[in-house]
Image (tube, rainbow, N blue to C red; front, side, top):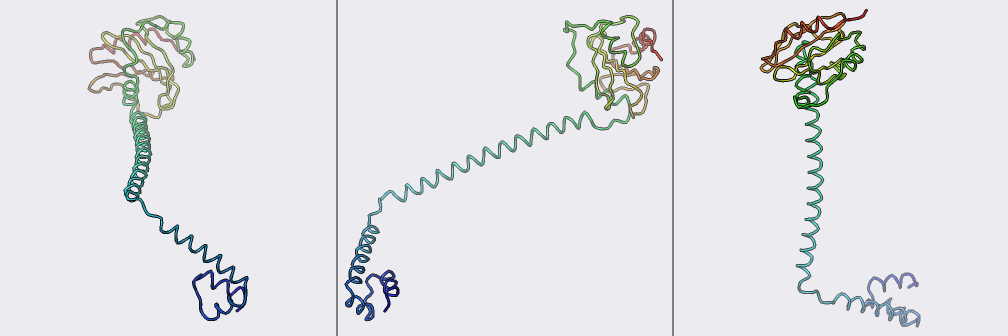
Length: 237
């Protein structure tokens, strides 16, 4: 038996003593020492395997497994909640944008949507009022100007009206704000002179290259507002 074959046999089974292995051991002192070393190592391994298991080891392992599982579940729950919150936010934002930007068939319908979008931003308690000079500075973008003030102007701001730069004026009416929109005649919306819903009435004037839309509550005399606009707004060529 060669040396490699002998060692493989002893590694596989240190207690193996078949005739060939025993003859090799008897004939070689080095092999005898090798066998003693392997047997000693095998005995140490056997003793190590016989270490008594603590009585509560099973309970500790189960507890640890349960705690690990609980931590993983909490982590998954936090991730799921974060994802749900993100999705809810995105859906809410999309709904809000769609609600305001959905296609409108007429100038009146779009103007009403515009008023509802801005509703609540203006009130009788506002201390800041817009001067005639500040108003006409903005009106110059539409080649128009007001000759004089005919109402208390609360706000004058540029705004996008179906993507077109327009002017959003808010006057103080009899009991609530009155909206006047100066919209260039570029909007691809059907012109309508009179419109309304359950809360507001609206009227539209064609003046030079612009539509002038007036919107107020049910008690507001919109014809008077239109007359004031006709008499006090001039347009340049």
